Image 1 (tube, helix red, strand yellow):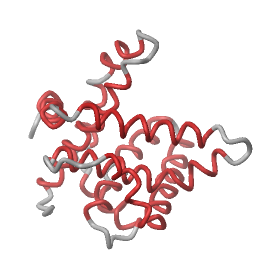
Image 2 (image 1 turned 90 degrees about the vertical axis):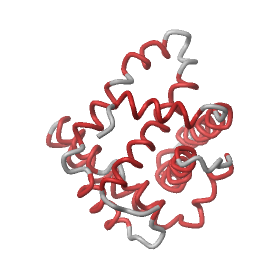
Image 3 (image 1 turned 30 degrees about the vertical axis):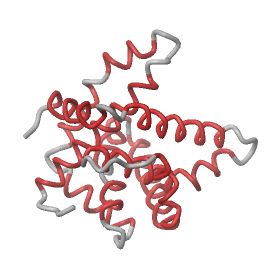
Image 4 (image 1 turned 180 degrees about the vertical axis):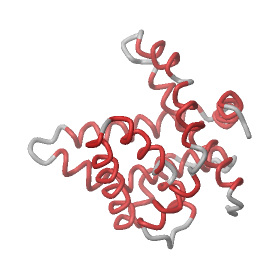
Length: 196
């Protein structure tokens, strides 16, 4: 089972020679979500509507990057042809995580970890229904939620450093984190015997 350091190393290898487009797609995603969220009165609704397909496109980019497939930044928008399922999946994850968070913060964190692979699974299984992607994510994450939580914790030091120069370091950090999460998914997928 690869360590957090090994998963981060996989991410760095994937990003080698690909930093600029990876930063570009991450910035584009952040700008779109940021602009949408500031639209008066309907910003939250706009993020809710478009967050699903944009998230699916962003994560698809980093999965392809980890698989050495040389994805293009335009991949961010290619998931709009699956708008319905991506929107429903995004909505369900938001609702379920919120409901678990009402119990306490810790159940909310556990729920977020449990559902963390659903978009990746949906990306690799276009015919899957949103609830099935969530169910499969929950199954795959049994015994692995702690691993993913520890992986997130390994970025705390980097997050502190990234914040020092007016937060500019996050331009580099977010793609690194996304590539590492994609590497985690690839390992988890292999452990569950799923083909690409």
